[in-house]
Amino acid sequence: MDLSVITTDNLQFTTDRLSISLMDESHWPDFQHIQADNEIMKYIGPILPFDELKAKFLDRIRPFIQEEGHWLTLAIHHKITREFIGSLGFKIDSISDQRAEIGYLVLPKHSGQGYTTEACNVLNKFIFEQVKVRKIVAHCTTVNTGSWKVMEKVGLLREGELKMDFFVNDNWYDGYCYGLINPIYC
Image 1 (cartoon, rainbow, N blue to C red):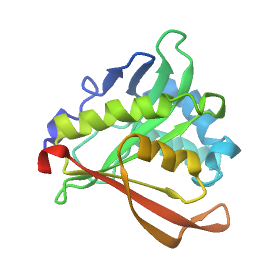
Image 2: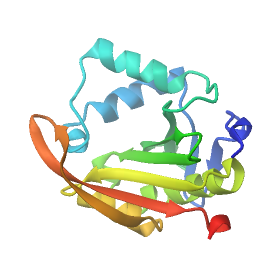
Image 3: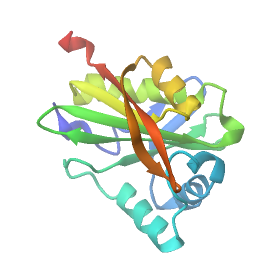
Image 4: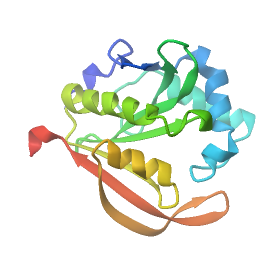
């Protein structure tokens, strides 16, 4: 695994429709907007008070220092219109196990258009081919159909279902675990 390739310059991607780059200070309004959307956060987590949300944002945009558990968050914009679509992120879940976790949020008006799948495909390619992790994982509640469908569209396999695994917004939810082994290890 090569964590040295996780740099601002290397975390800029373009696809046919998207421009994807690490969030920086200028993305605060976008981060605040997406993290405060009740529809998006219904199965993800609570809407945080301003001070907690700002602290979360500042943690997400701080430089990567090759540590486990630090979420790197990228902004997804439409390539032509530059409209903010959502966010995409990953963290090195375990250095010794060579595992990364991915996650994403997309504004409701952009859901169902394949943007999240397109963004995840380019990020997963980077994580496998450049960082050379052994495995990518993702987790979601079983009722978050849009999220697990994206996981399946990008090739992740459902590896398990955990009963009452997520406590989100005062409710317990079952969770799905997804994973994909880097093809170079198969």
